Image (tube, rainbow, N blue to C red; front, side, top):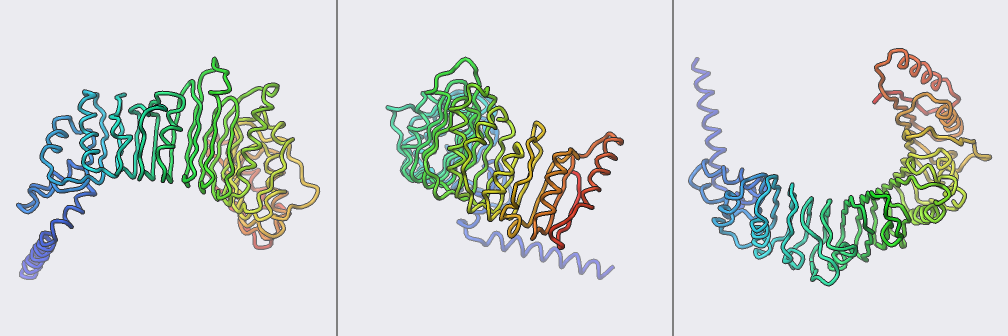
Length: 438
């Protein structure tokens, strides 16, 4: 019993020391710690001790998550620090547009560096946001209008810009905004519009992510149904493109990684200009080291694209491909340094598999890992696996992922077919084959 009391006293003493140590930290350090919390959580620390009573007023970040407008107004009125590092507003209840304008203007006037705004309703943003000289990071989602040409845009220190489903005053609003960001390094654009073009031009962007969904069959004007990219310094490119006309892209000499999905259901008889633009775009990717390419939903123009294919990928070491398996042949024959190959299930059955007349160089000396995801035991899948296992001389591992099934008969049939693969001839004695479900 005495030992228990001594242990309890020792624990209380240790806890007291821990609290004292925290309280002894300089206010500047405590404010830095509070800056990682939301403003509501930061204000809640006032109950801890007298020393914490006013600390929240000196925290450099203002982070609001669904607080009511009265709370936000009170916080802005009572805070003491002149500079704002981060202003984040996640507001789910529709309110007076004047209030939102006031809050953002307040942040701009206090030399804010990072602004992140998500609104569940549309409201115009104050123009001063687009001329904020201290802004480094800007993220807008479901809100505001990006100014069109003729409106002042000057963001001299902005390096990171994320625009997710925002409004645009005109068809040149995006290009106008980007041109006003002379040191921009990262751009994320998500568009879901019926009548628009997407033009992005910048000599400084290094990371570019574009999700461009086009909707509306009644617009056939080539000036609007297109995407144009001119970012020569980009090293990472992510693109989801559903345009109806064409893709135009400048040189990508520094590109090392790309994630591309092209979705187009254009009819073959009308598809030559578009398919030519797709080939020219893929040609721009020739310097990549890692490539994720999904062409499985533009099957109508596959023949036109393949007929014009003359592309080599000398730097490519990792490929993740969803497409007609004729594209697999093209990559095997034109990517001599390929080390990792990932093949994913396509929306329609892959067709056109024919073994190359001679074994590609990557199979003889480079390819180490193969992963096939979503296989269903179809004939063409077995033909591909059999060929790769037999000819890949330095292969180390093959992973076969098959979809789980509640149908016991279908499940037994799939497992029976997959077991056949374990008996296939292997060109590499050290190769292991792993079968799993996802």
